[in-house]
Length: 152
Image 1 (cartoon, one colour):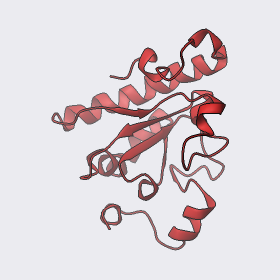
Image 2 (cartoon, one colour):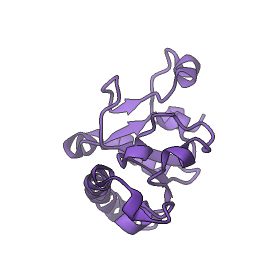
Image 3 (tube, rainbow, N blue to C red):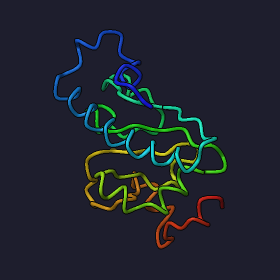
Image 4 (cartoon, rainbow, N blue to C red):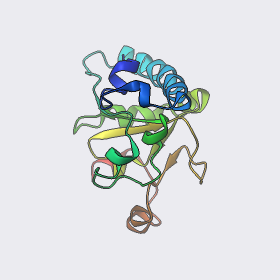
């Protein structure tokens, strides 16, 4: 699945990464890899691809749409590529119990059209599927997240 080396691949020298961020990432990857192993068992044709792992604060500032306080900068978030069919996103919506058991949270998949954002720390709202920004909150106001809503 996703290795620690892959997660930190954007950092030239991992000795510069705070040890707390490395520990956070190891915990996150344990959870995400457990989830992905169950998912891939159900969806054997799916190719697991990390879109974004650890980001330094400087790198995060260059990522379009990234939150300034992104959990990617503390080793607590990862983005996994998800095709236009949204196989992973739909599976997550149907398997919220496993997300809860593992202590994983996801950005509302309507805000992440080609990936699923997982994080190991709860958002302020404590919602399992959370709206990532004020702009998205306005756009999605009153529209609940549903499996049918991912495609339209």
